[in-house]
Image (cartoon, rainbow over all chains, first blue to last red; front, side, top):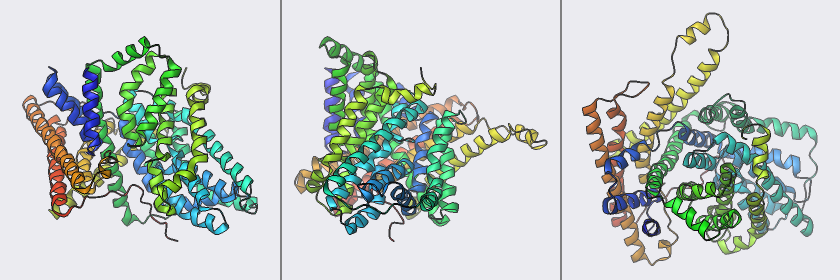
Length: 428
Length: 179
């Protein structure tokens, strides 16, 4: 009963279009003022101490690092490297786009920004070469979301914060699924390009490949610094994030010289306001999860599901459906922060591995970015490609189906995620 | 008003830069002081940077509170607007104003709770673990930031009421794309 009131209120408030953070906060306050005896001081303290953890501070640092490298110049270097490596196979520039999106998304950390950056450079080039526009738009809309799964991933840090799991383990668990998905999207592109006889590029000589690699390596090293640094125990995840921010600053300003020093304050301001927005949702989500715990809602839900005879398989299916639905109306960080406190305890009770569960949620967020009717990537891509949402919906379906098949694979085959962190001795 | 806007932007940008530098210096210091370079090692070991993490957290608490207020002005706090965007203009207007009003109300309440908390901390004279900072000074960000945010919600609401314009945050701005 209590659960129904809490969620009813939350959903009603969210549907009015107010910011997600405000809807969460108001739900909790309304509930506390009217229905319980929890002293308001205890709640007030939660509201202020919600973000005082060093682990959470990885979020602003990663955002800053990504923003330094979210630049057309960086995108051009990644594209040059990607097309020189895979452009001579079937799919040509399309295949190059998948790889370039994966690389740029990993470094910039933002799906919509990847769609914009890679899309505005490669889409006109593809059309000029004779690819149908639908093909190009479909590739870029879906591949743009790859960054969420490839570390450093903001969504994973947020999951780690919401469930007290290890950022390092999650990052490592994301590596193989991330590469697998990039590979599968590449296969889909290759297959369709071969079937329809789309143009290929001449094979690039190794000298050109090496030069392109050397040029893009400065940006790509960011990923290695983060993963390597955490794995080798050189830094904590938050320290790794701060180091990568400083590194990204040096690369953008002094090595690539994309970013004049006079623009740095702007990047700082944009990163700060983006971080503050996420931290504000976190503050209110902490409050919300405190309310759920004190009302014992996750426990009640787990018990109810067990009584209904819902096993782990069924539960994961329900989770996937719920999250894909949520992906339509919310952005990834809000989805994780609202659903994790509720679903995580249930998943634990059903014996699902916490890291594996995190990867499942992350993949869902990734698909949510680009599936119709209202994925964020679709909107951004429709602006770039100058195509309507309906037309784009038709254009993305081969890659979207690939992603959904991949989701089933990730969900029901835990070793895909868990093998690497286990093999590296990061988890038991 | 212009002065307040600039001050707000300058404050959160600087806090971001300061926090990054502090953690960077602390990590570099930790590794350099592990190197056995005569003279330098002793000098580095004499510097105690154990307070860096705590300071970083407090800088980010301030950044988060004031950044959230700045975000209201720039329209970065998004909600679920698929439903209300399908309503006709008159109803949509009512819902938008309701949402902004709710934002002002919530942040106003939080600001007041924060002010009470700070007042309590002033009495107890509690200090932080590593830095020895007065805790009320740290938490002063909560009432100040929240009241500023409440004010921003009212400001945005008033402008929307008069002109029908809402600040719109561009989700995917990338520089340097023009060839």
